[in-house]
Each structure stands twice: as C-alpha cells, then as structure tokens.
Length: 272
Image (cartoon, rainbow, N blue to C red; front, top):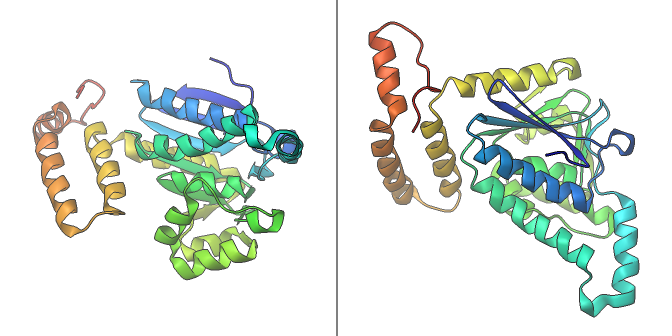
C-alpha cells in the first residue's frame, strides 16, 4: 500500500515510517494523521516487523507542526457551517483521538528519530513512542498557545509523566522552542547524536530490541504504560501474570535451549 504523505519500508524486521513532505518541513495534515495511524496498525499486524522507527524526510525537520493551509481551510469551513461539524474537521478529530490509543496498545516497541524541528503536533507525536532520540540540530516546542490553540494527542497527560509538571508547564505555557541539549537534560529525549548518525543509532537500538523475546517486549510495554495509572500492587499483579506467560513461551524455551547448546537464540523460529 502506498501513502500520500509517508514512506513505509520494512527491512531486517524493522518498519521505518518516514514523514514525507520535506518541501513543507513534513508539516502535518489530516491525511498524514490518518496515514500514521494506518501505518502503525499495519506494522503491528505484520509478523515480519518487530520494531517500528519513525523519522522525517530531509535534514531540516521531523515535523514542523500543522500545515497552515489545513487550519485556514478549517476556519473557513467552521465559520460557514460551524454547527454541522464539517467532515474534514471530524476526520482530523478522529485521527487525533485514535492515534494515542493505537500507540498505547501496540505489541511492538517504537522509536522516534527526531531530525530537526519537532514543533506543535511534531512535538507531541514523539511522546507516543517508547524511545525518543534526537539529532543535534533538533528543536522541540509545544507551540500551540502561540497559534491560539492548545496541546493534543494526550500530551497534557504524557508530558508531565515524562519530564515533570514544572518543566511541562514551562513548555506548554510559553510555547518556546528548546534545543536538543535542553530536551536531553529534561529527559524529553534519551540521547542526542549528530544528524549523520541519527538513523544508524536508531537502528542500533532497534537491533538490541531484536535480540529480545517479542513476547517479553509486548508484556513489558504493557506493564510500563499500565504503571502510569496503577500502583505497586497492580504492577506486581500484572508482572506475575505476564511472567507466567513468558515462562511457558516458545521464546523462553528457545533461549534456554540455545544457552545450553552454546549458540545464539533464534526468536524468529520460536513463534509465540
């Protein structure tokens, strides 16, 4: 399946999703939102994919925010037919609502490789990913208040849990843009690398994940995100349940067998 605003490629068990509007600094559109959601569902359903990486085309931007022409069209449509909730506005609203839910329920780990500007929705989309790495020329900013809007994609829930309430408040109430070094210091990204090394680093991380059991990674993802809302008791209960599932998984048996046979485990042959 071809996309209008994305490139989608699978190689070596890694799906790479590239936001592909470089002439527009990969600005977000309604179509892009729907295609991102579709690409994530597609990767999750594909047995040949075990890790997903998202990045932006070119070396200027991951996503520099929403395309202003989309906003201009929405304003005209709303003014002309506000109470009827125009179809284009409804489609974007559904995409905004569904993407966080899709990302939370994925069974496979995800990496956002942030190359250049990541502003507005370009800043909030990476919050939905498990790991965020940035190039040294990256800038991130929750710029919504400067364009008369507010944050979305669940960012008011996610960001305080990632970097704390005070730092989130500073970002969301000022609309400032922060260089990659600041994003690293506050914990918004886990590492910063030269732009030329960004995708290599992302693939190395993905390669480490490929050495792990898919069953273990799926349960670990679920445990981590359930832990955002739960307590120690619920975390321990789920860990106990998931660990029992892991103990009887083909991947655990393959690892033990491989260890005793003094070879590397092949989790591709051990289907859960």
